[in-house]
Amino acid sequence: MSEGVLREVELALPMVPEMEIEASQTATAIAKSIRMSPDRIDEVRMAVVEACINALEHSHSSDQEVFVTFQVLGDPEPVKLRIMVKDHGIGFSPEVQEEPTMEGKIKAVRKRGWGLKIIRGLMDEVEIHSGADGTTVVMSKMR
Amino acid sequence: MTETLSVTVDRREGLAVIYTEGYINNQGGEEIAKVAYKLLDEGYKILLLNLAGTKIVNSIGISILIEIIEKMLEIDGKLGFCCLTPTIEKTFHIMGLAQYAPIYSDEASAVAQIRA
Image (cartoon, one colour):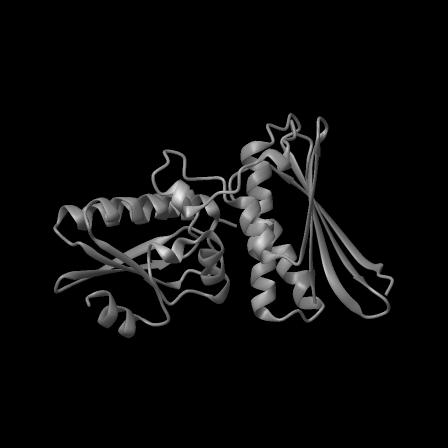
């Protein structure tokens, strides 16, 4: 089934503490508008928070902004919410990132690094595009 | 926009229940840790974290909760969670956190079981 973009909303957020809350509130409003179930909305909200925090913490972006695009996809009814979180930072190699485990983290000095694992666990589809011009996390949830 | 966390404690016989209200981010996690370590200093070795008032967490805040779990393991204590939203519970399972800190659906069953 082809899925056209029925609606698109873009945010440009400054990299300041708790900007992820603003992105998550927009995600919630759009997900509600397509009648996504409350539990799935909550999962989208948490994934958006994690993607924004990753950009905030790790991108080292010179423009100090995170760009979040929300797309409602469907034909003609909404079937999917796609969210793209983009930064213009230094990028990273997702394929060489070691997947965190509790066994490893419980004794480790650095206990962070869970963002991508949480995003992958909460969303239906996740793609990461990263290079010298920045990183884009593309994640989708069916309605 | 700010969603600060407030923490309250109910000290009981051999167990303390920590109640949170708000967003568990890095500051929220630090606030919980401060309260938890104070309770350990007071001699409590069983802590129950009731998250009924928390609808959103982030991985930085959870990382600080993992530090508390590590501390509890070191002293042979117990940390449990109760009253989580389905998404927070799912997140804890994704991370494998539930292997180290049991999750209970409600406070009454948590208090009964964590003491066992």
